[in-house]
Length: 110
Image (cartoon, rainbow, N blue to C red; front, top):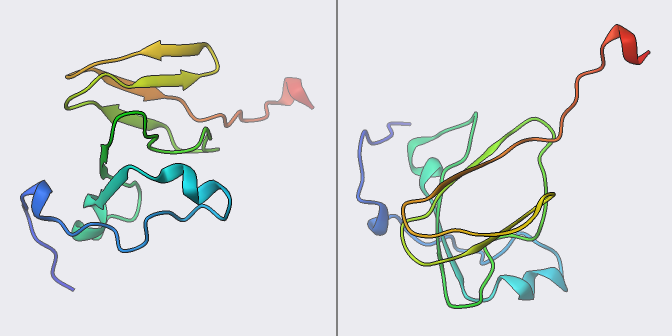
């Protein structure tokens, strides 16, 4: 399949399913509009999403990946990031890295 080299982010179709979370958690995603930008390009090793949030909406339930870091670039607004270190206010043009929780075992651990 041929994938584009460039697209206008806001012209990427909205994700057809509002949430992959099971009930009752899916209802907590109300107010989130998600465009899966990475899907347009056929990305397999990491995801790229454009989430637009209504006031007081959440982009995802609190989670951590075992092998993937997350990178968040805030275009507008003032979201609160919830991490192991607590809540942190962020704003437009902030970039944030949330580290994976994978810890490789070393001989000293065994």
